[in-house]
Amino acid sequence: MSRLIDSLREPMLDSLDVDGDARINLHREILSNKKMLKLVFAEIHSELHRLAEDNFDVEGIELELGAGVAPMKDTFPEVLATDIVKADHLDRVLDAQNMDLESESVRVFYGQNCFHHFPEPVKFFEELGRVLKPGGGAIILEPYFGPFAGFVYKRLFSTEGFDKDYPDWETPITGPMNGANQALSYLVFHRDREKFTRMFPNLEIVEEKILKNYLKYLLSGGLNFRQLIPNALTGVVSAIETIASPLKPIFGLHHITVLRKARN
Image (cartoon, rainbow, N blue to C red; front, side):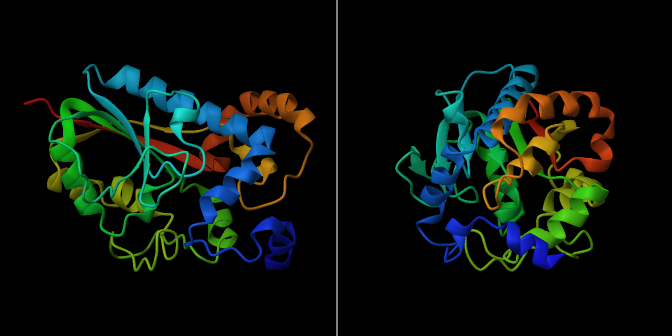
């Protein structure tokens, strides 16, 4: 299995330091040539935006944390793009665990596959409680924890683990990307939901869902692997995903958790 995965890795990334400054720009270059993957991100952006419209009826800043390679602003320009590292296409550097933002100023935070890179999630939740407007919230997209996702994520990346039995929320992260536990959203919002609710009663989990575009994401190779089929088949794959939507709990690769801050 490991040999097959190695053979499919994107050769442009052979000498990449995942914690280095070049990562985001190199991934942006890879994304520019992957029509199928760009569609996946556009679908994700639209779903995150829809969830914000459905759940947060307050005014305020819309901001993405860990925006990285495919920021929300590519689809919705009004969303500020931030990351822990600097990049030319992003609006500013921002630490999600220590935000340089005014209290009760933000309507919605978006996060695409960034939450599991936060070494101290409790600090992030404390910052949400401070910075969010009452009635605003955070929409967090993360690796799913179903049977197929668990099998895949344990084997894809040497720099990140997937441990559903890890005893703590904090992980020994050694850089922006290295050392993360991709199962963190499972630990916090599912295994330890009672603990989360007790610690942060002002942050309610109001919606959860599994994304259906797992097949396009897998066949596109994501940002780190070769694409497996031509872009011309994207429409066919999308149709298969729609038909196979009931299989999301088994084959899904990403899920979304929506948190809303209680009103005063």
